[in-house]
Length: 254
Image (tube, rainbow, N blue to C red; front, side):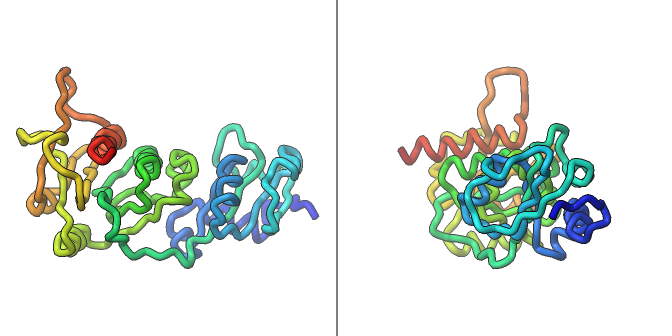
């Protein structure tokens, strides 16, 4: 059967999932595009339904799976897509059952302090995945890590990196310090650079794009470092800075 009505209950549910409050309520999010859907299948995440547009895509383009598929016509798919040139496939992913406990066996844990740009969050998730880390902590004031722009920016890393949301970041960081971790904050007002410290058991804090790291977090930081810059630019994009710091950690451990 092919759905031809925008008033279908599944279609209305997908439209709701474009808003964070409903993603939280239903514990679900949407991924769109052939690559991301196939990646979700390969990573064996909890896919509740795959929506396929009959006018865009043939079945044999999707990895073999026993997941429920719902077929819609082009008019209906165009009403739920969030990309300019849709490939005619999206999936509803369930977040339920995810272990949100912090893994204290990892050397470096990245923490996002009120990051607002979804593209930055997605790129940071992708970078975290690239260095073999499997978790990230996000402050409650940061942009939602499950919105469509973040997910597209992760290029599939969203399925491999656990996202832990913190209600009180300062208190959480203090608890992590009690477990042997040091808090590393990147600020301009310091002589120490990212190359001067050891990243064993470190929490790398990434600050807000406009205001940097919160004052309360800077005050409890064990290390305050900067990325040395020899040009006239004084600061870097949050995701670029995160990549530079994480690959210094990689360099130290090769």
